[in-house]
Amino acid sequence: MEKLFEEAKDALFLIEENKCIKQNNAASELATDYPFTLEKVLEIARGEGCMLHSTMEKCLDCEVRADWDQAAFPLILEDSKGRQEQFSGSYTVINQQNALLSIRRLALQDRLQQVIQNKRLIEYVNQAHENERRALSQELHDGLAQSIYSLMLETRQLKWNEESEDLATKLQKIDEDFVALLGEVKQLAIDLRPTALDDLGLVPAIETLLHRLTETTGIAIHFIPMIENKRFPDSVETITYRVLQESVMNSVKHASVDELWVTLSEQAARLILAVRDHGKGFDLQQMNEHSQGLGLLNMQERAESIGGHLIVHSEKAEGTTVTLQLPIQWEGVK
Image (tube, rainbow, N blue to C red; front, side, top):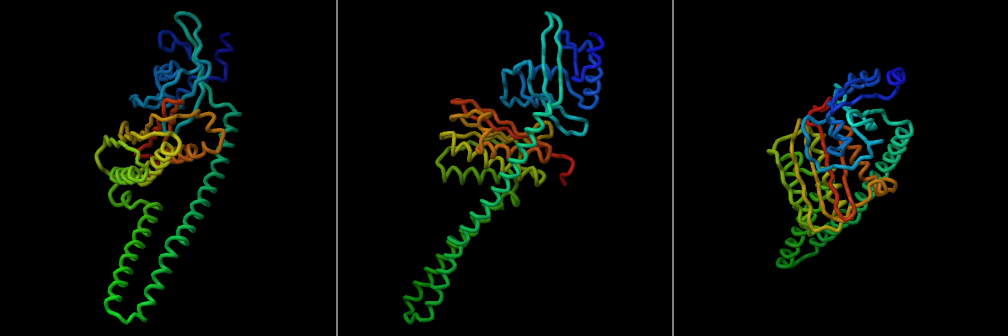
């Protein structure tokens, strides 16, 4: 048994009163490559923290809790360079004093599933880009092009106008049409890239976005910024803004709610965005098996592209909470 324990490929920790009294070679290698606090992993096993709990200096109280199956619970470990990887843990009670904690990397089947999801994500992103191009083309053709053509006709008609009073009226009408056209151009530019994000920063851009969404949807959106208005790396601001857009629109379209809560905070060198509703909720596993889940997958991919994480917690009839965590400084951000 001693030899089996030492040579096991899984990282094994013999636990007594929340302390490790013995570990095998694989456990020593894991603890070296991915320094972690044992107590936090045990808290995840007991459902007292989310799968990111082991990477946090302080619990963010993100309300993501689960009655994990202690035979196989998920957790994230972080290496010394800040790179994160998902593992599977198992906690087995041996007797009143002792328990065995086992940690392993994701199985090959899980990795293959991740590859499949990545391929689906690429297809989704390509299709999303194509849809955006089609929508932009349609907007330019049906909106701006038609407005410009109409103004051209109105302007050409002026040379046949002989009455000064009628001329003044028509010039006033053309001026109003130009103002409306300018508004269309500005709105199109905002949809492509919000100027407030570049000019004023993340908090004012979010306030502007949520105010516009409240006016167009009638849903009360409560925004609670728990940070001062300051600038973050461009990638952090852009991803936070886009994830907020996607999360709020998902709630508007699918949750049947009349209120939303958005919070923005900074903790442990991470920017934390939380979007919460008390709507219909959904089965996350079932959602991920269909195309509707690709929007969530896209948000997750955006977060992971700069070393962040996205956690979606939803229960039917209880609502949904989307929590985005992004490192404020990471290797590659200028």
